[in-house]
Image (tube, rainbow, N blue to C red; front, side):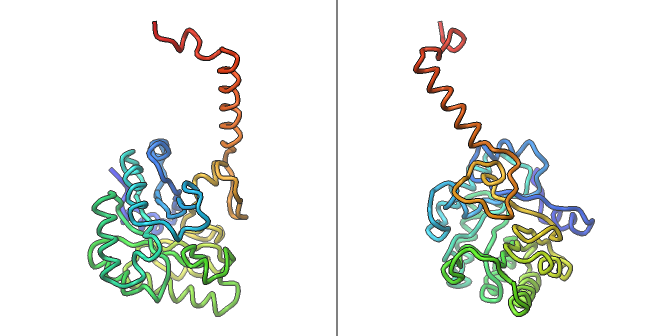
Length: 265
């Protein structure tokens, strides 16, 4: 049985930290299903990590459904959240409902994640009214990379911080159960977390958020294109995989593989 939105909210009420990771495929989700991870996010970051794209903007609803279906098949006990990709909800309520409905019905996700604050509040209200749980995302919102002029720390001045706090409260009032805070100063994230009854999930937002999220390929040392300051590598699997492949190549070349134990008789 998967964890629920109410269970995630209860963890905040009890002062317990919440763990979240991205995941994009069945085999990794199968590994995660053996852990007590609270939330799996099928993020539109799959554009960078799995598809080699420059940013998340080209990802489609179909891409998100496809990858979320794969994760769902592993039957992980974590709450399963799917990103709504760029331009799948910004246009208006009708489009947001249609695309979120597809994601929930076709992918098996239990909630969707959207980026933005006041400008998408009506969409959030409509989704919640339609019984679709919503996770928000404020601060550095990758779908707004062109407006920001790159991936930069947000809320560094008072007015920008106040805007994020206002947007976070609006998302809470609209019915969102959680909000991701990305690339904002630690004390600003602390202030937001203390002001909300819903869950805050930090990524590059310090230790005072209710929970943390990382891209799993980053924390496992699989993705070397760039390493943000907020990433901690808990393993360096790319080096291990590279060595394993080179050992395989050498054994094939030397005729050592397949051996007797790998051969049918």
